[in-house]
Image (cartoon, rainbow, N blue to C red; front, side, top):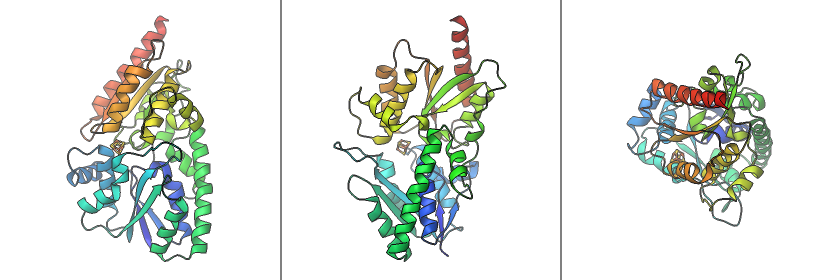
Amino acid sequence: MVKVGVPRALSYYRYFPMWKTMLEGMGAQVVVSEPTGRVLLEEGVRHCLDDICVPVKLFFGHALSLKDKADAIFVSRVVSVEKGDSDTYTCPKLIGLPDMVKGSLDGLPPMLEFVMDVQNRSLKASVKSLAATLGVPPSSAKNAFESSLEVQARYESELLRGLAPGAAMSKVLPDGNGSRGSEEARDTSFHRDPLSIALVGHDYLVHDSFISHDLPSRLNKLGAKAVLMSEVPDSVIEKETARYPEISWSYEKELLGAASHFLGRPDIDGVMMVIGFACGPDSIIAEIIAREVRRPESPPLTTLVLDEHTGQAGVATRVEAFVELIRRSRNKR
Ligand code: SF4
């Protein structure tokens, strides 16, 4: 049985239930890299150009950590995820990820590239070419694809219910394989005056406990419930983004729509943008949110920038100060 390594980074947080079900349905054994740690991050940083965002550096580290554990490494090329009249794409790093891996990392097992480009190519066609590479007959590939869509739909409904990716994966996959940490961040019952703080940021930043320094749990310990943007339905995102100039990056549109939604919700006490240093799309969208989306009556908004140099003390100070500011302004009302 071929062992396929899946790096626990980038699109893993969004699509792993689909990928795992599909690969296993094609007879592969799936091996996921361990959650991020210091050594893995340093390896990723060492093999990446300085001015690349930290999520890509993490991807490199995760891919390298699978070097001797898998016969092939699964790398997605996520080009477009929205079918529609307008041209929308993901970010250039997600589009060029297989090329960056090929160009920068030596000695990896062969790459299994999986293309997601719904504007130009059906997912079925991508599954067929993956099956052909694995030597799987079309009938098995078809069954694997159908099951994978069903598991992915269940995963997405768990996210909509407010579960973090790790907890949602544990619900829909027989042996879990989710990331640890964020799902523990939901109980604020011990606190007399719990706050609700919305986290607006890519799930590969917010839910990588190492790089976000356990952000959701940290808020929880301070008596604040972390409200995740994955619980905002697509229909709400669409409605919110229609109020602003068109954005061509699909995932940034989600950030904009979620921020606009949370900044107008009376039960949200504060909004924290979580962005990656050296991320062009994030820095533009964070500016638009701060200048154009935030209204005078909106709850407080802050931005937390994460990179490989961000220390735990820095995150702790920012988060504590934000929670304290919200609590004080609440007491004055
Ligand atoms: S959106 Fe930003 S953080 Fe995410 S992969 Fe692209 S450049 Fe990196």
